[in-house]
Image (cartoon, rainbow, N blue to C red; front, side, top):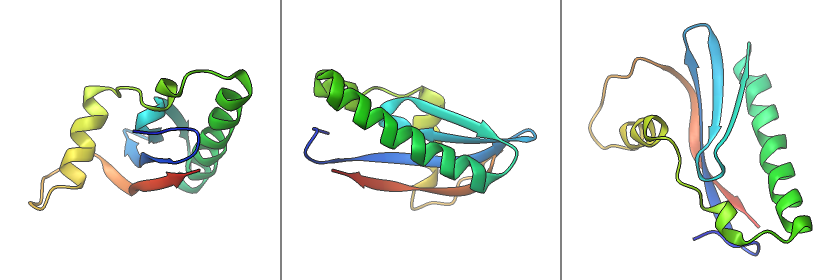
Length: 100
C-alpha cells in the first residue's frame, strides 16, 4: 500500500493505433503523445505533480492506491507473465517506480 512516505507505481508506455500512451496504474494517470520519449517525460512530470499536489492538499493516502482500468491491469499482467503473451500493442517500456 502506498503512503506519502513510501510506495511504488506501475507504469506502462505503449503504442495504440498511431498514438503513444503512458499509464501510471495506481494513480489513474494517462498521458498521450507522438513520441514515446515525450510520453515518458510527460508521465514522469504528471506523477511528480500528482504526489506533490496530494501532499499539499492533505488528501487521504488512498488517492495513491486507486484501482486502474481492467484493460491496463490485463496488459500489466501479460507483460509481467512468465509465459510470452501476444499483445496487440507495441510496448516502449514498463516497470515499477519507487515513490518517496
